[in-house]
Length: 154
Image (cartoon, rainbow, N blue to C red; front, top):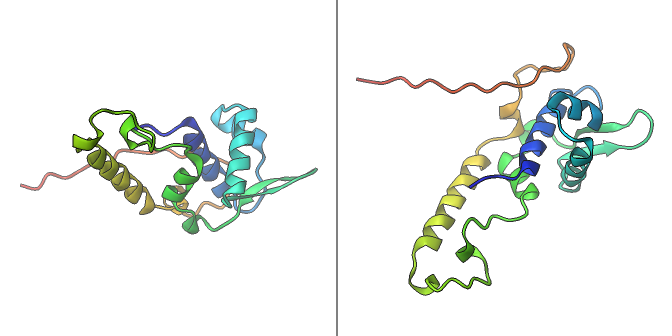
């Protein structure tokens, strides 16, 4: 399974705005920070605002800010609001033409995997993605993610 670029950019946009709670952010600054097309980011901003994740302010001095506290913005809910289609295989569509549908158990397995994926995302919020104590006063620094090391217990 692969999420669309729209979901990827939506998460980046929310993380950027979430790190700047004291001010409005603009599409152009986010586009520069992540090297993303402003036109594409405008569409994403519109979708996030329609879903209630962002509040936008028009006019001179306008911009955007989170419409809810970061801990109230669930990652699974954001992905659901951005993704147009979760059809991983053709047999998950209502108008499937697959000849195996009546005798195949793949549909249930794939559907279960998708549900597990979404349930995992539902365990996290935007707050989990933000740098603790970020107040924006030191300027923006892109978030970096590191692999967690695992300890072998013998």
